[in-house]
Length: 260
Image (cartoon, rainbow, N blue to C red):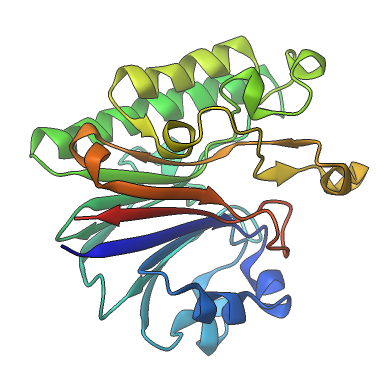
């Protein structure tokens, strides 16, 4: 059997993260794959070191709008060679922002997604929920072909009260609205497994903090970044963690270990 170590991190600007030591962290991570979200750059704007770090293949998708959204995946060539990668969910209104990258490996299919934020108003909450539904349709397509699926990224919703520091104060805030939580519940009804919560059922730990209010120093955070797996990978999950001590963004990295 082989053990695969995966990380995910909303870096809130990959070029800014590079200046804060991202490549040193990458080299030390011993990761087989790393998904990054909110890269806020076109691939041509990235340094050669980001586009081709030692030992890794990289794949990128950017938003049409400059300095916005975008995701990337680093795949370790020796440990997790890529069959092929696909961009988007196949619907223009969801793909224009460069939110989705799907890489197929022998062992599983990895979705790396920067899900929409509903904070700009009711129409964005509706867009976010529509995105969730389209995503589930695409995942089901892979499952119907017998492919195990791993999903990671910034989902932009805290599911339960344990997943944010101040639930009562935020029950009318996007990211914890009843309709958003109900839409995320559809992930679980479809069979996706929240790996961190499965292994740490009572842990009050967070992945994002509002930097404008100094929330990180007080640990007033939200858990809105996830690794999900399909049921055929349930028994392969041997580790899932949140790395709060890693700085460089308003989010911190999360990790998943699979033994297959």
